[in-house]
Image (cartoon, rainbow, N blue to C red):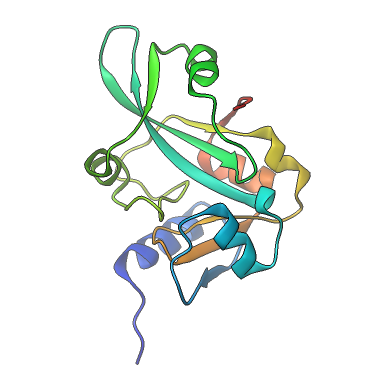
Length: 162
């Protein structure tokens, strides 16, 4: 009997509770980049929704998590995004910060199923794809969704990321 990794099980429960209709696929190897995920799934790299957690320095000087869901074809312009969401700075989060705020590891961060809500922003370029794929709480697991469903499930605000 093969058992599912606990982080995928938690993700699956959250996906169902939010009305997600996509399927979860566990790939044989970790897919740490959008290009690897796209190759494994047979889709364009732009259809991969990367979940990138940043450490945002607020205007008051506090550090808070910010999640940016971006097309795998884009790199996030952190200065542009910081100005757009009105924070002083955005920096790549360290692994411990990612685990603390998402309960997941880098490479497997999903758009949902975090211990507490995280302000989330969505790259509108993902709208160009009828089916998009995002991490499902584990580096080897992904799930399918649509742009509208992802936006609804996450409550994300659309922002240009590059």
